[in-house]
Image 1 (cartoon, rainbow, N blue to C red):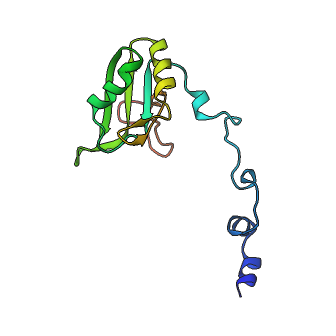
Image 2: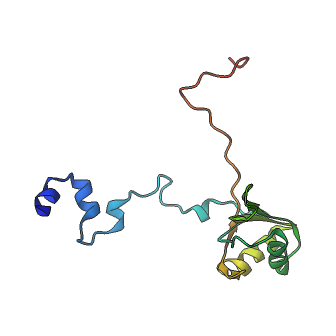
Image 3: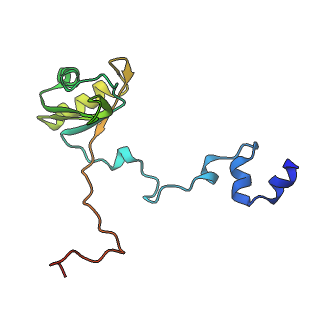
Length: 141
């Protein structure tokens, strides 16, 4: 019965649920940007994105950990509005680009509050896009 169901399944589903090993490239197409990873897209700047933070990590602890590698202008752990705990990521802004580079080299893949954290250059927030099916707001024709 199971063999008949597998034979009747569309080719994509059969390949996805098959126990025969296939290369990952056949299951998932390459990225549209020509195979460039997200880390290579981020332009070096003084603002770092830090992920993998513990729920108990505070802004003060984040600043203290990253200040070993240069002058930290601002550190911020993004927290949940209701619980007040960390959402698992934050931002650190250094005074110079050299300090930011040292901060990434020194903290990427290291432990902070018992969790392995990852530091990379922060990417700028994309501008909000207007949906195609919505008319322009009043006054903007």
